[in-house]
Length: 249
Image 1 (cartoon, rainbow, N blue to C red):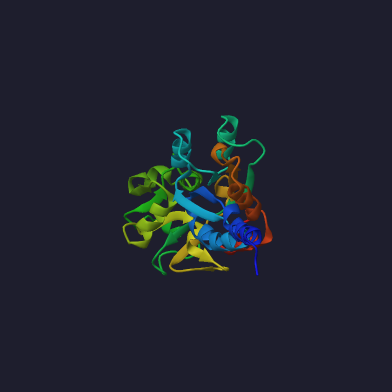
Image 2 (image 1 turned 45 degrees about the vertical axis):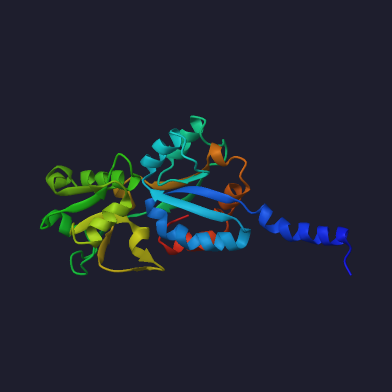
């Protein structure tokens, strides 16, 4: 039979587990939506912490963070934005690292539109070409670099339709509002194959490497869930998921 003191001790132990759990608010580049959605439940199961994600354009997140948005971690679509936040005192020095290297792909929802080459771009027999806003989204900037190196930017400029993020660019193509679009490979690729439609895998030589950096923001400096997430992203379980979506590490 328990004494009142023994019972109190047991109750305190029972409550200790949940008390140690924390929540991490993460700003996530839109191209990394599917990978993080796959990572989140595994992270939560492994650590007991809760992950709350917001998806969008890296440039938009920069502006929101500068205006005090309560994010603990930024998973950017570039390496320059996290570095800038660190230099401006909005991120924890030394916490920044590359969690993925992205790839650009020209994609069509129609299985017969693209033949694995840029021939359709040169032919120009389409009405709209979707890209992400190059001012806010690194994948949009990469798309412009490709068009410039192919000598097609001025010719195709009237056909460009911009989404604020790479997710919106994908939406334009998936819904038929644009016949073609430059999107992140991770959005249309899983486990070694294209999920649907047709594509041209853009050679890396045509655009600057898309190094995607993570950084611990000032808001999350003392948040154990934020530290745990960054550590988890460096581990083998997260790496396997990231690579399955076509990213390089």
